Length: 607
Image (cartoon, rainbow, N blue to C red):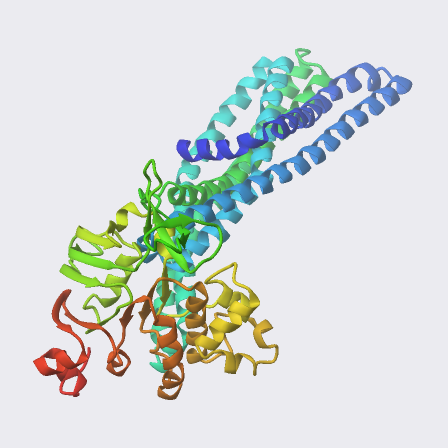
């Protein structure tokens, strides 16, 4: 908790001047309340009991001015604190989003979308509420409490002893219930994240749920998550709810005892009437700051639980990138083709810029090689076992194999979405660990099996592959992918706005847009991960020519279950259980009459 508070203080520290003003106005507001009550002693003893109504009127005006100043101060510090709170939340939200852009794909594999979204909703909202109201209320209540205690001691040290005994009991109750509340509020936040994650997953997979008639099972699972949340929330609210009645009853008991003792002291002449009235008011008021703090403690605990989850993400190690080689546009000397010059203009040529004194340029050719690569997503299971392969510039390399054989894993390693356990992967003779990840990925276009379209126009979705592409280049890419024909028949053509991951479009149309997105990027290396898996045979034939144009002159890695799409591949790798068991072109593999032959002739099936 100390670390979490320290980090929150670091964010608030950016607004020191405003916080100083907030503190000043809180002091004025708290002072006005404490001072106003003390004025009752003066008003009763010096004016009411003596019948000085002119002086009484004067003191009432002063008392009213004090309360008015306190009210104005409370309004001002509340407004200022809202500004600080929202600015702080903006900073935290921005840092959280930026951090997530730096995390590896492996991190998102380990956490559900709903759990991560809960950070931006429940956890952020709790911190916002705590900063908007709880923080200032607690500070104001503490100052008011200290002021009241001081004035009670000034008025009557004897009666103060009674009050202190009751306050000790109150603090004991707060400590006991607060400890339980903190535990259950933390559990509540975690269980709420679990519920959100499950709901998000079920909504996203609603079609699958209905196809397999798993509505009842989904409901039963949800009841389990919901019951865990209910138990945690019940525990949190139970202990939070018990605190106020306990404090209220102790306050009434303290007030009754003080009235009896104070009345006897006044009758005996050891206490004046004005002091007794003021002291009794303080007795009623002293529990209010404690009650307010106890109420806000629950919100503070929930906010700290949320802040701890957020700061855990912010402390995650970012994606490792120690690369120094960068990608740049290059111009080829007309007289000497081996001589390259860096340029800002697009020439169709790219080069790797080495991190040396000369800034040596090496032409990007698309020569990718794996040498004894071993990889596993975790230490317990190895996925790739000593993979060695090469793709010469302009070659089309295809991967075939059963599900889980490691086909997609190989393409993920080329992008450095994951780090290999051993072996090397080189790109134009450069170890990919020496290339900056952003530059590495800029040189590689990828069409994933599961397409994702963003909310925006079709033009914007295609241009996502190259933010500097002109409208003409976007249309050319769509034509290349054979998406132009269906786009022009949409109500607004290329300006048609897509929502809900392209709802309203067929899966095949979405896949065509993903291919167009890769085409507009014009990458030297292209990865097609089941790129035509959602396209019917007729559409597949229509885009074949366009795909060939897209692949022309590029190194291409293709993963396909339809063996007909890879017949013209320069090399086909047959994988099983993380190893390459066969390699060669279509004709040579058929001649071997091995696994590929069995798959192609239908004697065996991919699983």
